[in-house]
Image 1: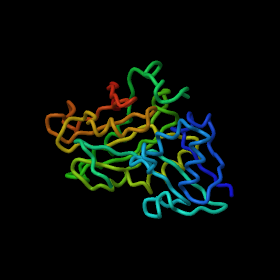
Image 2: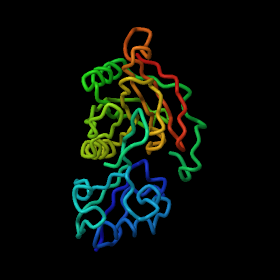
Image 3: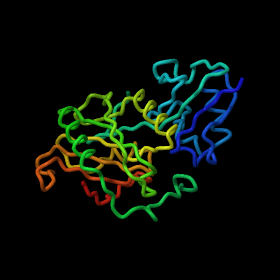
Length: 99
Length: 158
């Protein structure tokens, strides 16, 4: 099963310039694990040290924010598109509470 | 196009100052006022990265999904739509804008810790009276945030 992951300009340095990376995986977690195995510089952008999805990255499956789906457990299938975008967030004080 | 990982990024070769069209600055200030007391946020699309001397083209106001006076997060659904449309049109995220309703237009520790777009400008508009521009309008300041460190870039409006 081949899943297309669309890489935004801000992360293309970490994929050698590739805009689309195709990887296999039956769940979003498997897809992102395969992606970061192929492009290790992406790992810290996507995962926390404990392997959970980083708070400040947005991942979408077919246009839906995976935090509103099943997160890393979201099932994948042929033909879907995964998009990764660093979040745009901050504020006038620290700390930031979890979403 | 920068090369190497984020750890190698530097400010060398970046524009020494940037300019923002008056109509975009006015729209940013209006959005910040309309959203107060919550922080406002939005995106400026450009012809090329601000770090490479690209020009700002247009302003896209967005929703702060945290709806907070001290925190913002651009609605992920809007971020997706705007990012894909820009990329498909060979345009880029030129600037990332938010307001501080009562504090100076300087990045907070929160801002620098979360910032994930080193080639874009981070613009902050402050509604604090003490931060007003010489013409009395809310002050807007521009920053590079690279490796969690903020560096101000002189911003000309008009």
